[in-house]
Image 1 (cartoon, rainbow, N blue to C red):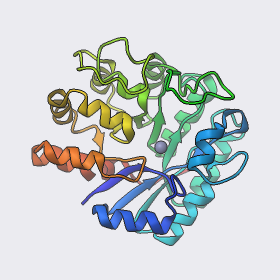
Image 2: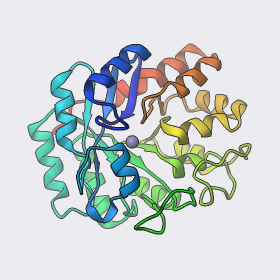
Image 3: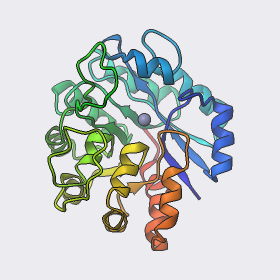
Image 4: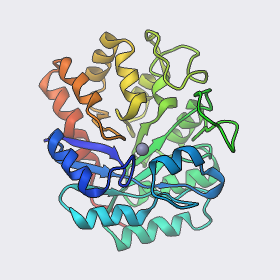
Length: 290
Ligand SMILES: [Zn+2]
């Protein structure tokens, strides 16, 4: 059994048909499909237009998730998260859960501090209705990309905001993701300077410390950020996977096999590997209720 715990439909050229073909080729049984609610003020022309459905204010909308679920209900687990600054964000999640088979919240990616009052209210609501939430943390690093119209593209704030949010939302399962989260695997000062720091890991990073501190915190291994964190210091990365195997989820956030190819080289103990490949993901997805 293999579960990809983070991906999106109509993303980087992958329609539902293409996703299912890719899953079959990679031996992936199920994929968690997540929205990304992008208001006009957070619309990054370059990345949104190049990788997502067309539209002035689109991101990955809920109707694309529902269409994928209708096309292959046994292959997809459906997720949705409204932007926390929508005045009706609570009502949106309530009606999504009562109308549709929504099992997850996410992707929760906005230019709002995680511990902003509107953010905390929505994150607590996810917990009340039984939805684990995948969050994206990113600092405004110099990525070398066009920054128009913002000077940089931060999301969620800081690791301190994540820490305060975890303390304030003990009943909500948080699945952490994103370059900001993963750069803190190391206890150095590179996290707000480079999107993907690749110097050897200094022990004592906030990422493993928070996983130890909060029973409601998990993390998905997706994207270049997860891959870089595990490979920048491969010996550290292997031990990290074993030490935190109760909290980590195999995930991609793009349609490639880089992470799996790396994991195969590590010869992980089978109980750790089973939890990462599907066990933790299966455990987190229950029945949502309003
Ligand atoms: Zn994503």
